Length: 187
Ligand code: NDP
Ligand code: ZN
Image 1 (tube, rainbow, N blue to C red):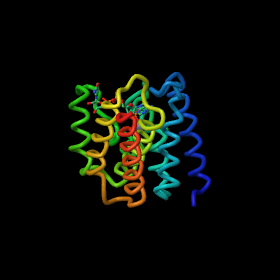
Image 2 (cartoon, rainbow, N blue to C red; image 1 turned 60 degrees about the vertical axis):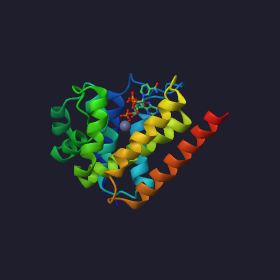
Image 3 (cartoon, rainbow, N blue to C red; image 1 turned 180 degrees about the vertical axis):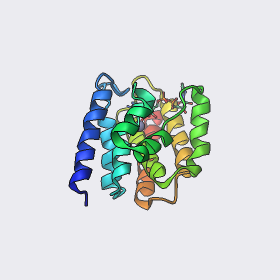
Image 4 (cartoon, protein in one colour; image 1 turned 90 degrees about the horizontal axis):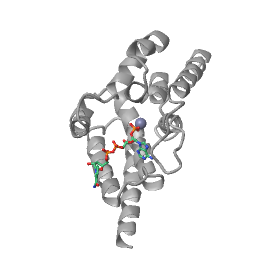
């Protein structure tokens, strides 16, 4: 179980991430506050994956800060330590690369990630594929949603072997999302 230092770190990280993402929204029609997503990823790790490693849980809360906000690696290192920084860096795309190269790199690098990073990426893909089915980015065609899920499946193929519950959950969410899109396409 988490001790009082863990709870303290968790709340400090949650506050930090909520401030960093405060002006951002997700891409769905309702423009959901961005911080909902990192919270969902952390909650998925905890509830579905039964992950009880504090570094992984706070890494989930921070997983998009380097990629999508002005947060620096130095800030994370100073405030939360080298282990947390290493995990967040492992799940951060290199934004200097063009989009298609970034997507290919995610597929190629997945098998070489640490266990923590694999679990975090599994939870991230679960949440994003769920959102594609239930609150897709606005203006995305059904083909685009389908392509996203196929790409996510390719990334997840390289993440397997670390957490059966997360992997099975991803398979269920992806199958349901593809089924829902197929039905929409047929109508
Ligand atoms: P993006 O990378 O632009 O968007 C997906 C990312 O946005 C997610 O990984 C997620 O990342 C974040 N996100 C924010 N809000 C949401 C939300 N509501 N639901 C889901 N994700 C959200 O898109 P892609 O480049 O991945 O495009 C998807 C697919 O469509 C690709 O396979 C691409 O090739 C294809 N495509 C097809 C087109 C077509 O017309 N057929 C046109 C363009 C692309 P995070 O969690 O990191 O924030
Ligand atoms: Zn994410």
